[in-house]
Amino acid sequence: MFGFLNIDKPQGMTSHDVVAKVRRATGIKKVGHAGTLDPLATGVLVLCLGKATRLSEFIMAHTKVYAAEIRLGIITDTYDAEGEVVHADSTPVSAEQVSAILPEFTGEIEQIPPMYSAIKRAGKKLYELAREGKTVERPARRVDITALYLTNWDFPRFSLQVTCSPGTYIRSLAHDIGERLGVGAHLAALRRVSSGDAFRVENAVAFDTLLAAIQRDDWQQFLIGADVALADIPRIELDSEQSQQVQRGGFLRLNCHEPGPIRVHDPGGNLVALMSRRSADDGEPPLWKPMKVFA
Image (cartoon, rainbow, N blue to C red):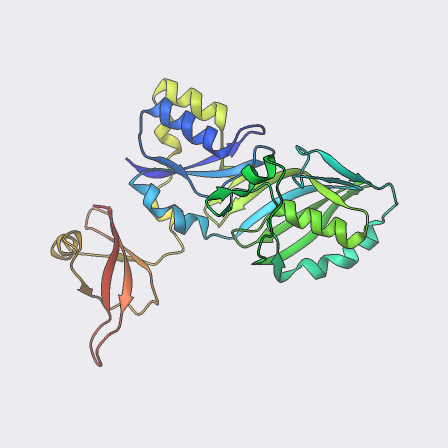
């Protein structure tokens, strides 16, 4: 088994819940996800099946697009609608005020993760400490928000489209915007619209549809292969001898001058490995080393 599933995650389920149900329903032991969505969130959740679990880091590295609904005037302890209210403010805010500050949250910015997150501190996840009533200092993380647009206004709620780097906390973005406006805010709803070019919500399969297809044993129609999922990684065709050499862990000299990584396929089109570039001698083709071997 090797492939990816693009699931439209329903609200109320954790990413782990989705993985566990697919694992039980299909009987496939190795199932993982490439980028967590909170229970509140819906939209694109990429599952990696079988040996494809070893490629999750490359899928997670893709740029993400979100549709976020933010509620002004209420701060919660989790920074989203599932938390306890800790502050309320009914001061009016205009759409023009929100639009005026959005450039401050665009580009490379420093972001402090929320206490209710899975980041570990001293061996414990932050949300475990938060449930014990503890608050600890969290170092700021650098994230890149490449686009941020106001798409709907219905005070005290408004909607944003966010294009951002992996690791961006939209809950923290909502909280920080509320702090900047002086009235507080929290994330009311979130939908992941895309993860890279390969995984978009319009092409995602509804979770109930997938489960029904698994029961009928025709669910593999939804599997996405390496050519689609890894389209941003250059593909190189190998002959049979080269394929066998790579499967044994051997290096190859290839007339490929990409910075790397590259994916190499055997004559049958099967993904053999991802390879990284090593230093090349003068006048010699670059030397490539297997990073992850699959065949």
